[in-house]
Every structure is written in structure tokens, then in C-alpha cells.
Image (cartoon, rainbow, N blue to C red; front, side):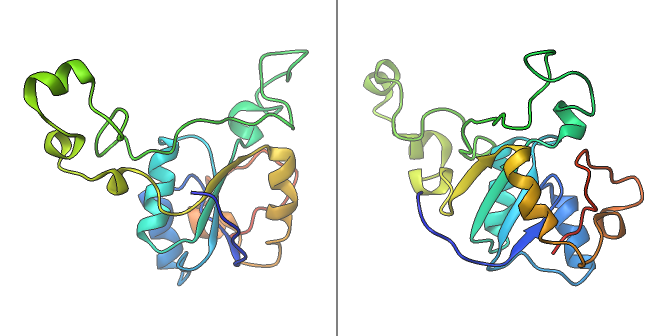
Length: 174
């Protein structure tokens, strides 16, 4: 859905269940907040689904250069890696619940079975689409938001000593 959301920001690493568990263990909640996560480690739809289930109001997803930017090699146009202004985009549908177009069943199949998506998957359309807004960002646009979290608990403190980001900032969670 579209929308304007003005809430506190919190960084949730890759948006995996273990990342949200680590925030919770540190006494931090994403409920009522805008969650910023980086692409990678799991499907983007799962990142939004995980945040939504925990009460987040919106999700921002950016490509960290540690995964596919200047940290791994030359960026476009001098190489294959994502430039600072590059944005990855794609569906955040909850494909882990039911894959495919949640609005319709292939007409050839529906004619034979008289089935709806709910009949096939057991979920309604509303169950399969996020109820909170999400937006992909470039790391160029994500950096000032992440910098604004400075002074809060460090990402290494929350996500473990092996946490590593590619931006030239001190990653904090908010």
C-alpha cells in the first residue's frame, strides 16, 4: 500500500527472524517504527512479513555495498556491482505463503476446478499482500538515515561481533 509514515527508525540488519530476535533480546522493539533492513540473506517479502508481524509501520530496504557494491568490486559503469544510486526492486508479496498472482488463478485451471486462490492456498488476497508500505532505497539514500541512528546501540553489539556493513559509517540500530 501507499502511505505517509512518520515514526522512529530502527535498523534490523537483514530482517530475518534472528535479527528481530536479537533486537528483542536487547530490549528493542520494532512495533510502531519504520524498519530499515538491507537486501540479502532472505527474500524481500519475508523481511516485510517479519516486520509487519511484529507491529512495524513501514519497511525500507536498501542494498548495502558489503553485499553488492563497492566493497566487492568496481561498480557500474566500470564494473558489474551496484553503484551508490542503484536501487533493487521487486515484489514483497508473501510468496512463502502462496506463490503466484494473489488476484487470480490461471483461467485454464479455474475453469476446470472452479477454484479461487483462497481455495488453493487457504489464504485470502489480504493475507498475501503487506498491509504496511515498503520502499526500496539506494545505499546513497539509506546512508543519511543510518547515520541519524548514531549514538544508539551498535549493530555489532546487537547482531554479534561478525556484523559487517559496507558503508563508511558506524552502524547503530536506533
